[in-house]
Length: 111
Length: 120
Image (cartoon, rainbow over all chains, first blue to last red; front, side, top):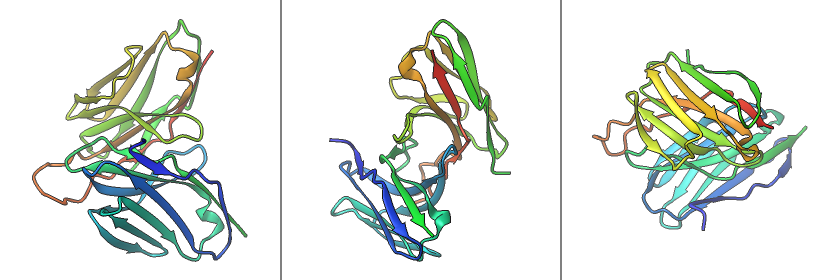
C-alpha cells in the first residue's frame, strides 16, 4: 500500500464548477498536509497547508483534513481555466523534511 | 526574491558521461532538496541537505552524488547513468523546521523549474 493515494484523473470540468480533489494516506505520523499546484514543465508551487485536522480557506480554495479517516480534500470554487494544472497533495510528519507526494490529479477547466 | 534557479534546463547524456546539475537560491534557506519526477508521477525525494550537511539520502544509487558547497548552492553529480534515470530533476529549498514548536508553520519548499534529463 502506498503511503499517499491520489486519483490521477484526468478531471475535466466546465468553468465556474466546484472542483473536489482528494487524497488518502496510511501513515498516522503525518501532521502537515499540503497542496501543491504544478503547471506543465514547471516546478510545483505551494497552494495551501494545514496542520493536523480542520479546515482552512484561502480565497476560492478550501483545504480539509480528517485525520480520523486519514483523508484530505481540496475544494476549488468558481473554477477558472487558469486553474488547469496538476494538483499534488503532500504530507510530512512533525519536524521532518521528507515530504511524501500523492500521484497528482490533472485538472482541466474548460471555458 | 523567491526564485530557485536550475541549470541546465535540458541535458542529454550517454551512459558513460559525467555531468552535473546545479541549483541556486538566494532566499537564505538552509535546507535544500533534490527530487526526481518521472512523467505523470509525483516528485520522489532523493536527498536533503540541512545546514549544508546531508541529512536524508533515500537509498539513491551511488551513480547520483550530491554536493552542497555552500548555503546557496546544491549540485547533483551524475556518472554512469542508466536510461531509466531519464526524468525531470527538481531542486527545492526551504527553512529547516526548528523542531522546538509543535504545529509551527511548516517550511514552504520553493521549487525550481527542473532539469529535464535524457540518458541515451
